[in-house]
Image 1 (tube, rainbow, N blue to C red):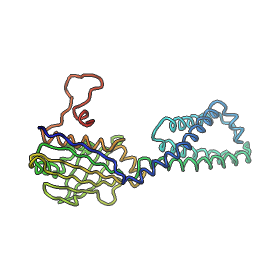
Image 2 (spheres, rainbow, N blue to C red):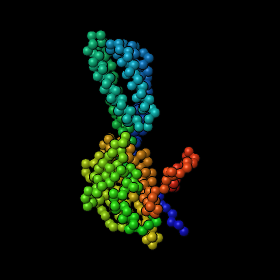
Image 3 (cartoon, rainbow, N blue to C red):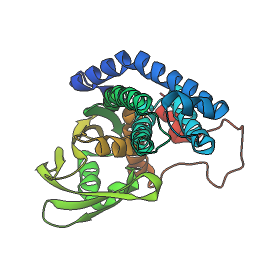
Length: 314
C-alpha cells in the first residue's frame, strides 16, 4: 500500500499576544468606522462648500486649498472603510491631521482670521489626532507579535538523504519560495536574503544551534535582526527507514511595526499554507528531482492550478 502524505499546519495558542492584538483591533473597529465616516463627511463639505468651511473655522477663504484637503479626507475615509489593512490608512489620517494643524497655525497669523474660531478648530483637530493615533495603534497589532507554524509530510527517501539535502543550506531557496539566496559564512553561520515588498530584498544572518546528523537541525537568526526567525526540521524514519516523516516548525517574532509589515509581505495572509507548499516542493525535489508545474503546458480551465497547489489543499 502506497505511503500517504501527512500534511498538518497549525497556529499555536502560543500566539496569545497576537490574539490579544486582534481583540483590541476588533474593539477599535467601531471607532475606525466612525473616524472614516467623519473623514468622508468632512471631505465632502470641504469639496462642495469650501468657503463655508473656511468661514466656520475662521480661516481666510482659500477654496482651492480647501478642496484639496477635502479630497485627502475622502480618500482616507474610503481607504479605512474598504481596506482590511486599516492601520496604514489611519496613519495616513494622522499625517493629514498634522498637516491640518500646521495650516491652521499658519492661518491664525493672518489678519483676516478669526482667532477664536481658529483656536477652536485647532483644539478639535488635536483631539481627532489623538483618536486617530490610538485607533491606528490598535489595528497595528492585528498581524500579531509572534507567529508559530508547523507542517509535516512523508518523503519517499531515507532520512540521511533528506537530512543531507536540507543541511546543504545554500539549497534552501530551491524549495523555500520566499528566499532569494542563502550563503554560508561560517561553520554554522549563514547570510539569508529574502524577497521583500516592491522588489526590495530583506537580509539577515542566522546560525545553526543544533545539528544531529540524519535526525534534526535547529536554527535561529542572530541578534539585531528586524525579523527574528527560528525554526527546526526533524527527520523521522518510517516504513523500516525507507521513507521519512519530515516535520518543520517555523517561528517569527515581529518586534517592530516595520518588521510586522515586512513579515506580512514575506509570509502572506496564511503563513501555514506557505510553509506547507514549501515542504511539498522539498518532497518533489527529493523524489523526482524537480518541482512539478504546468509551465509550458497547454492552458486548461481559467481556474486551473499547479499540481503543487492542488496537493496543498489536501
